[in-house]
Amino acid sequence: AQSVTQLGSHVSVSEGALVLLRCNYSSSVPPYLFWYVQYPNQGLQLLLKYTSAATLVKGINGFEAEFKKSETSFHLTKPSAHMSDAAEYFCAVRGNSGYALNFGKGTSLLVTP
Amino acid sequence: EAQVTQNPRYLITVTGKKLTVTCSQNMNHEYMSWYRQDPGLGLRQIYYSMNVEVTDKGDVPEGYKVSRKEKRNFPLILESPSPNQTSLYFCASSFERGGPYNEQFFGPGTRLTVL
Image (cartoon, rainbow over all chains, first blue to last red; front, side):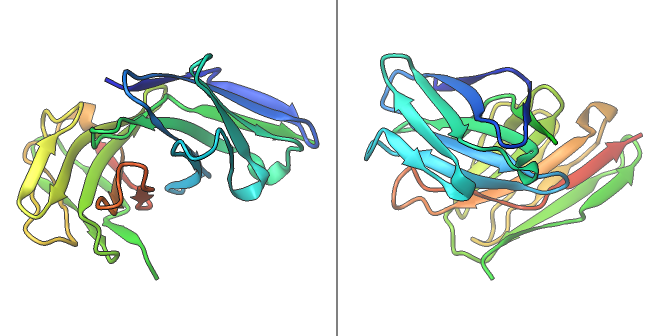
C-alpha cells in the first residue's frame, strides 16, 4: 500500500524566508503524488501534483515540488514566504491501480512578520 | 460554478440519533469519497464510490454507511453516532476516466459534534 510521511507537524518561517515542507513516500508502484493546502475553516485545495511527466512540478501561489525517486521524497518549497501562506499542508499519494488517496498527517505552516 | 457542496456545515447531536450528511457535486465526476479529519491524524478515508451503485470501504468505515443512487450525490449516514465520531468530515470527487492522477475536489467540510 502507498503511504506518505510528513516530517514536522509544525513549521515556522519568517516572512520572506524559504519555505520547505518535507514529504517522503512509500510505494511499490510508480506513485502519483499531490500537495494540498487547507486554509483555516476551508476545504482542501490542490497546490500541485506529480504524474511522472516532469520531476520538478510547479504549482499555484509560487510553490513547487521536486520528485526524487532515489530519496523517495516529494518536498514542497517556496522561495519567499508570505503571511497568506499560513495554512495546513498535506502531502498525499495514490497508486497506479488504487483509488484511495492516502494523506500524510499534515504540516501546519506559521509565517511570522 | 464547479463545486462540491456539503450539508450541514455544522452539526451538534447526541449519541444514538441517526443523522445524514449530504454531499453533492456538479462536475459529473464518477469518483466520490468521504474523509474524516482529526488533529494529528490527517485525513482518513471512510468510504468511496467509483460510480452509481458501486461503493467500497476505506480505512475507517466502522459506524458509517453510504449510498450512491445518483451520480451527483453521495450521502454519509451515521446510524447510531457515538462521541468518537466527533470530527471534521470532507466529501471529495474526481474525474476517473483520465486516470488516478486527476485532482480530487473537496467540499467545505462538515464539523460534527456527538455528545
